[in-house]
Image (cartoon, rainbow, N blue to C red; front, side, top):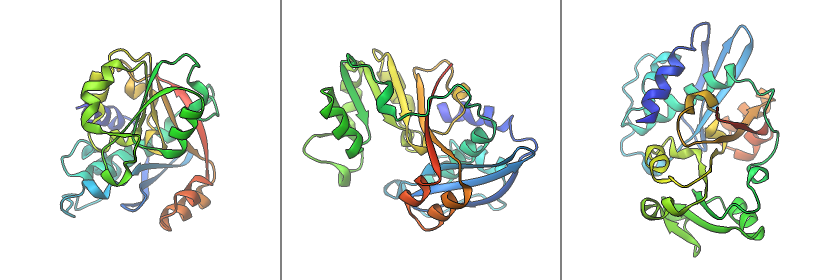
Length: 246
């Protein structure tokens, strides 16, 4: 499991970092850390449809305790673990070479067959308006529409895709390994959304080529939005960026 490998790398970067605050909440679970260089906020989308039992084996919260559970079969533990990994990543990430653009800007005009893993209506609409041959996959039936395929078809169709834009929630629901394995033809593989705040080095050697995420630039606005359960409130404290995976 890729998350198992990522958590080991993240644990090596926790020295000097303190867990300041956290919350398992909607729409995002979040972890706030602080070190000599200041604060960093990591998030992971909360997937209530994946929760079977509201239990948690973590009795004494800490940064390390959360990260160690990043590949847990318990989705609550896994979500907290990924948010903690993202907090560590955001503390250490170097964005001097990042492009401060939306994911749309890195997709070439001749991209061919494009897979959008996770139905993100505004992005799907923009891609269709630009004329891409788009295949939208979604796991949650509540987010299906007439142009959406069940994620059960990803296994069959991903090998035919030339580019993949995947919601980074595939890290939370545990499908990232299958997506990477099946997207054998894709020259562009982007993990997008706030959940994709990982250090790009963590994905070196995989088929992932880019991370399109958000950097918190106003902690007060971002945290208030998270505590109020507001995506827009959280987004107002952020700036979108795209980085390449080495």
